[in-house]
Image (cartoon, rainbow, N blue to C red; front, top):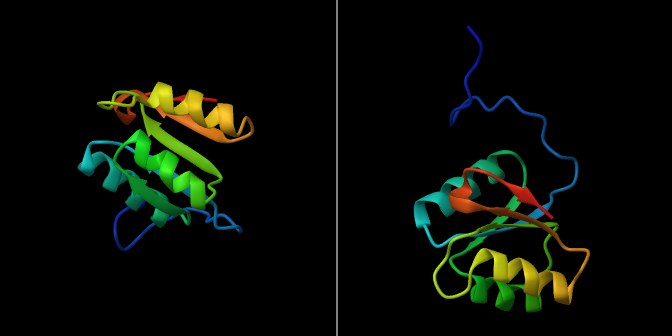
Length: 105
């Protein structure tokens, strides 16, 4: 029987560099699950709960990739991608509706 990923047995190759990932999602359970998965996979993951908070965080910190939910109240993930790309065209972004399917820019 193949080993299953769990708290005690995570069988993955970890990245040699600790990449920084910003997770943007207004659903706390989804955001926390993404953060846990990323941290267990060797990434430095930070969570914010909306697009405006992400823009504020980007003023003082840099990230290798930003993963954002598409549907968020006030400032959508699509609007966040547009604004971040306007400020930093080379920023890697992953836009995901409800974190179930992905669009990578």
